[in-house]
Image (cartoon, rainbow, N blue to C red; front, side, top):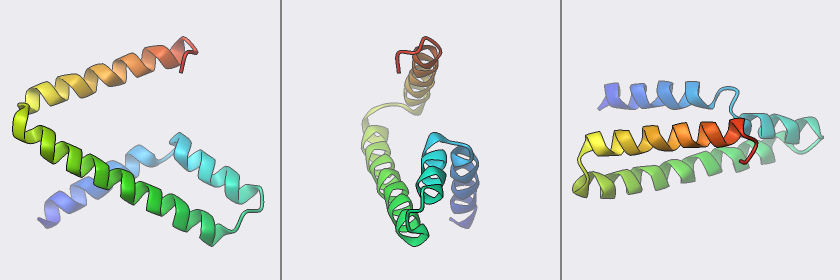
Length: 89
C-alpha cells in the first residue's frame, strides 16, 4: 500500500508542477490574496478532483478493461493537445 501511495504522490506531484492550476495559484498569491486562503482552496480542489478520479476510476474499472481505459485517456490527451495547438481550447 505504501508503494502505491508513494508512486501516486510522485506522479501527481510531478504532473502538477508547472500546470496551469499551479500558475493560477501563484497568480492569486502574487495579486496579494491571502496565502493560506489560496493554499486551502487549491489543496481542497486537488483533493476533491482526486476523489472524483478515484470514484470514477473504480466505477469504470469494474466494467471496462484497463487497456481500453488507457486508450481512451491517451486519445483524450491527444485530442486536447491538438485543440490547444489550434487555439480552440
